[in-house]
Length: 113
Length: 116
Image (tube, rainbow over all chains, first blue to last red; front, side, top):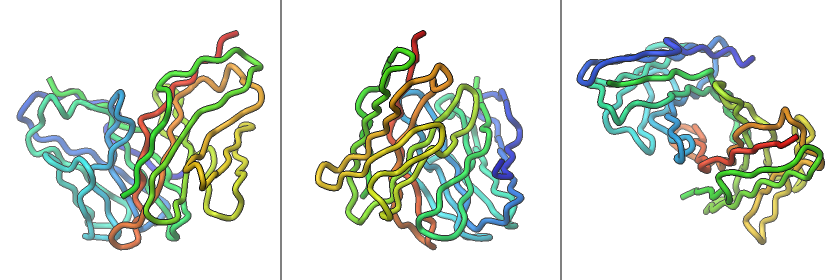
């Protein structure tokens, strides 16, 4: 168990509403990531963080923002949810070192109606 | 830029048969390569990784993968499939990003079915 939790685990929301997903780690790792998983697309990187208040965009960042005010929490916000953002969202953490693997959380299933 | 291609979105084998899941990568720098497994309704779990120490890499649950630079491949194998191996498998390549973050680029996944 890599010490990662995600909340909520399931959420149904309406189009146009804001949504925030939380990733919490107990490992004190510097690097954190948000991915979305969709059938036929594998996992795609949304945003990542390389330290407190240090974040950058990934492959599919449009419509998403992130914040990291402390090491253990990485928040993903959908400012105005759309149906195309219905997906399973995974958070991951990684220790220092280029050969280190990423450890994944259990995921959040988000449905936008 | 890094990319990964997994050949075959679905693979079906009989219990006890050889498992072979194919992965080809593209990378402009020496790659670090990973195989992850995802069981239904769960997150991803690392099976094994290649970090240039040895070309044949052994992982958990009897899986192994061989790095072949000339073929830009990192295929995953297991000599004898078990029913519990039924899952989705993802190949990934890592590449350097800002701040040393080493982001992963994933293939689209291969769903393995094991028939009794």
